[in-house]
Each structure stands twice: as C-alpha cells, then as structure tokens.
Amino acid sequence: MAVTRIEWHSFNAWGNGYFTVDVNIPPATLGAQTALAGQSGGGTNYTGIKHYRRRLGDGSDQDIDFGEWGNWPPVIFDHISSITFAIATGSDQHAWLVARMDYWG
Image (tube, rainbow, N blue to C red):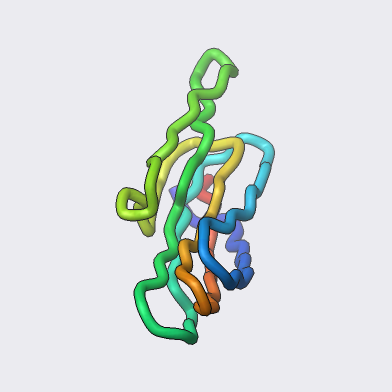
C-alpha cells in the first residue's frame, strides 16, 4: 500500500472549552494526525482526535469516541468515514490545530 493523497486541515479556538471540526469522507483507509501549531495565554492547551467512525466490512459504521481531552490520541490509522479533530482550551487562551490525513490505497 502507498499514500495516494494527502489532505491538510487547520482551525483555531479560544475561550474555555472543547472546540471540534468534523470531516466526513467517503469510506477510506487513512492515517490521521494532529498537532498543536501554536498557542497564547497561560496554562494547558491540547489537540487531538476526539472521535471517528470506523467503516466495517458489512458497510455499517462503528463509533470510536475517546472521551475527555486527556484521552485524545494524536494519531489514528483505520478504515473510516468520519473524523473529529478537537482543541481544548482554558480561559483567556487561544490555540491553533493543524491536522494531516494520508489516504492509503
């Protein structure tokens, strides 16, 4: 298998809470990764993969949810139909996320 396409995504968030972006795709085998590209304000900011839908062999989807921010992995590799990238910030904080999706075929 080889990488057949690469896609980049980015977004930013500020204030106290979780901020997410859902990327829905035709089912594909891919590796996805995310990183904190920058931040301002004191305290901890966090980025990761909060959720994805695994496409099963019978055509149904299985939801994989990682829960709270400390459990969000920075990388997944699976056959998916949707992925949710997320940022967690505190009060008076601003954070930037960058994500890469490598499609395998």
